[in-house]
Image: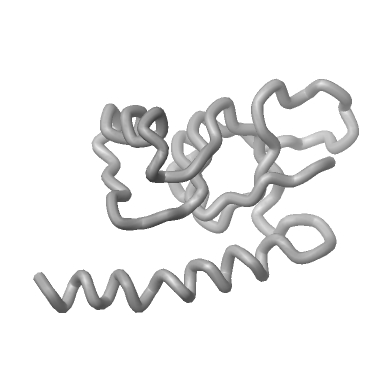
Length: 105
């Protein structure tokens, strides 16, 4: 139990570095997505929505996007009514994206 917590804490700086590298100049490597909900994983509204999905991110302070869809045409004007982000982990198919940074297109 103590080892798993130590491992998680040791991995957090790597996540921060990966997030910073992801957001540097040029087009985002994972593509831009439009998320209807965006915020910190510790935000009560985000925690509530993640809890409904059975996802627990307690102890992690990362930016999360929920209900995201890819933006395929950049400059389409008004195509995103939520928050445009790029994320390091979109393995949930857009339902939940982790390690996000807001971007301006």
